[in-house]
Length: 264
Image (cartoon, rainbow, N blue to C red; front, side, top):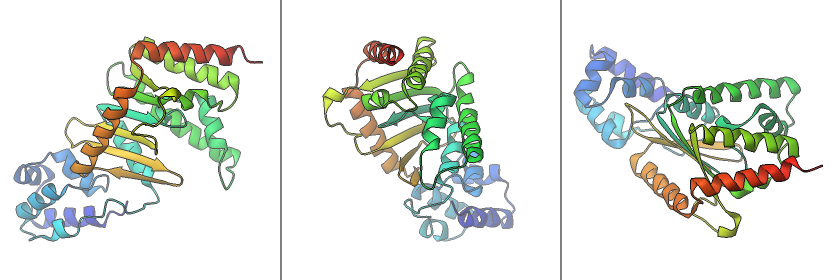
């Protein structure tokens, strides 16, 4: 995202002779939240902006010139990737393919290989490495806490072929059995559900307000306006209530993996 806002905040803070911690104390925020705003990784809420204006004696400048939440940005996913690495809780929803942090190398390569214009082999290699780097957050046995809510279509779509799918589903089963993640499946027989329109990631942090990320074709948005994040959380919870329990989800995943494994 454009960092003119963050740069301006930093300039005003330094002109006032304040450290990030001093400004955070004056504005009743955390130092890390100030740092993320200055770096362009977060947009303050309207209430945060009002407190920053008051702490810096800048009138209503920071409040009036908040970046609009729907501005399209070229590096939209880079912001989401950075937040993903900082999160203590991540809840994923996937409608059509396995979330990035849960993908095997072969599955990731199959997903990244398709697109327009076609990617070169070198570009695919680079993107696969990046995706596998993201998955390393699961190497920690406890944090972040990860839940994945999957539409059954994710498991039924043979991305990369039967062998790749069998391995991909087996990989997720192993993560569930080791109690590293939870997976809940929304069965196809359910019909319509509250998340039918797209994919979403919800993230919580130790010292920042929660955020969400939604993605479509060639676009993605990081949301951290409290009212919208709360609405997205409610939408997720509504769909989760319609999903199969963990035990039944795991049984369905085993059954589908077996079907792929026996496919010629």
